[in-house]
Image (cartoon, rainbow, N blue to C red):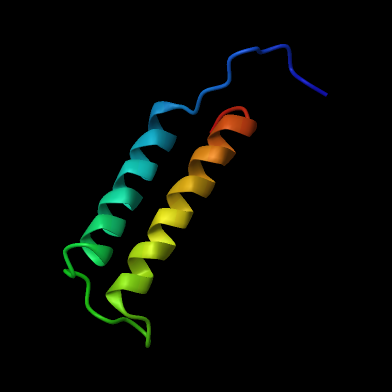
Length: 66
């Protein structure tokens, strides 16, 4: 089941993608810099960006090569 690795950490590319998503989240929720797109407010887009950042980091932890 496990691949023998005891320390699991996402790669640099995964971390950078998550950082970009967090910046989009901050810009949408706290700074109100993102306009409404396709009927979704900028705050909703920011929250979705936060959730996507968490998912990307979890995938980077559990799947090798991400």
